[in-house]
Image 1 (cartoon, one colour):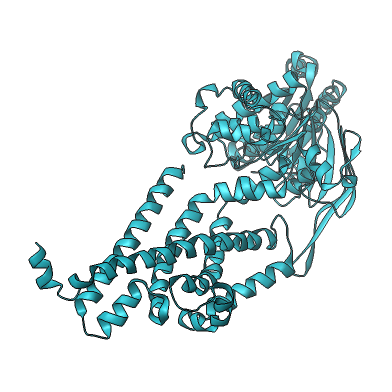
Image 2: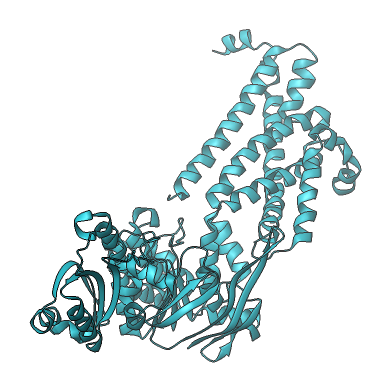
Length: 227
Length: 357
C-alpha cells in the first residue's frame, strides 16, 4: 500500500505533514471567514430586507446606501481585494502574511456576497406571514428574530452552503498571495515545481471539504423544512 | 365598538394618485357580524386593515372601543392589536412551526408561563376542533384545517374583534360553510365582534347581520342584511344579490328560451320578491281565486337570513289586462315587491340582466 502510494504520488508522500498543515489552514480560514462574514452579512441582509420599500422599517436612504455598498464591493475582483486592503489587514492583524491575515480580505469579500444572498433568502418569506405577525402586535425586532430568521432559516442555510463553497475557493486564491493553505500548496509547489500529483491531491482535499460542507447543509435543510 | 370616521386612504402609484378608500363612515357594534362586500379593487382589503392600522389612513379617525388608534404610540398600538385578531385568505401560517407552535406564537413573551401557554393553546385548538393535530405541520393540513388553526391563533390573546380578510375565498363551498359556521359559533359563544370582507354575497347571506357594499373606495350601501337583500337600492348591490340567489342565471335561461320569453298578449313576465311571513300566505292561489289571474312559476328561491325568509320568484302572469293590474295592486298591498320584467308589446325592461355572474 505504502509503496503504491509512493509510486503514484512521489512528491506528495514526503510532505504529508505539510498537507495536513495546509488542510488545517484552509479549514481555519474558511471557518472563521464563514463565522465572521456570515454574521455581519446576515445583519446586512436583514437591514436590506427591512429597509426596502414596503419593508417593516422602510427607509429608502439606508436601503440605497447598503445596496450601493454591496454592488461596489461585489464588483471588485477578489484577487485585487486581497491586495487592496493590505493596509487595513496589517492594522488589524499586525501582518499581511499567513492564514489569519488572509481572513480579513476573505471576510471583506464575503460580507457583500452573503448579504445579498441573505436578502434574497429572506424575501422568500411569505409577506402574508409578516403581516400576520404585525396584526398580532409583534414588535419589529420580534418579527426579525422570530419570523424572518426562523421562517427563512432553510433559505439561509442554503445560501450558507453556497457561500461556504465560494469561501473555500477564495481561500485557495488567498493562499496564492501568502495566506497558506491548500491553494498555496498547489500553486507554490505543484505548479511552480511541476509536481502534478501535489496539485491533484490538493484539489481532491478541497473537493472533499466542499462535498462535506454541502452534505452537512443539505442534511440540516432537510431536517428543518416542512413544506 | 369600531367607528371609522371619514377615513381616506390614498397613495401614489407610478405617479398616479390612487384613492383606495374615500370618505368612508362606518359604525360596527359589539357582537355584530359585519360583512363588507365588493369586487376586487373596491378597497375593502384596505378598509379592513384600517381597523388594526396595518394600513394608515391619510385622513379621518379610527376609533376602536373608544380609543383613537391614531393617537397611540407604536408600543400602545401593538398592545391594542393583541385585542384585534385577524385571519387571511391564504391563512399565513408559519411553515417551519407545528400547529401548536403556530398557535402559541402570539402568546410568547406576554408574561404567561409555559404551562399556561400550553393550556391555552390546547383550549383554542379544542375550540376550533383540531385537538388531534397538535404536532402536525401546516403543510400536512387541508385548507379548512389551516384556517381553523389561523382562527385559533387569532383568538390566542382573547380579542374582542376578529377581522376576516377573504377568509373563505380560497376554500371549497363545503369547507366555506363549515368555517362560517365556526365563526358564527364564536360570535355567539364569545361575543366576538366579526368584520368580514368578501366578494361573495353568499357569505354575507349565511352569517352577516349587517353589510356594507363597496365600490371604487366608497361605501355605496349599508344596513341590515335582511333589508339589503330584500330591497337593494344600488345597481351593484342588486348584481351581487342576483348572483347569490342565482336569479341572474335563472333570468338568462328564461330569456334565452323562446318558449318562456315569448309572451302572449295577456301576459307579463314578473319578478316577485317578498320578505318574511307573507311566505306563509297562499298569495299565488289568491291571485286566481280573486282576480282570475294565473301565475306560472318559472323560478323560485327562498333564502333564510337570520331566521327571516326572503323569497324571489319569476312568474308569468296571465289574465285580462284590468285584472292583471288589480292583481299587481293586491301583491303590492301584501308587501310583495313587483318588478315587471317584460310585457308583450313593449320592448324588454331588462336593465339588470346583463353583467350577472
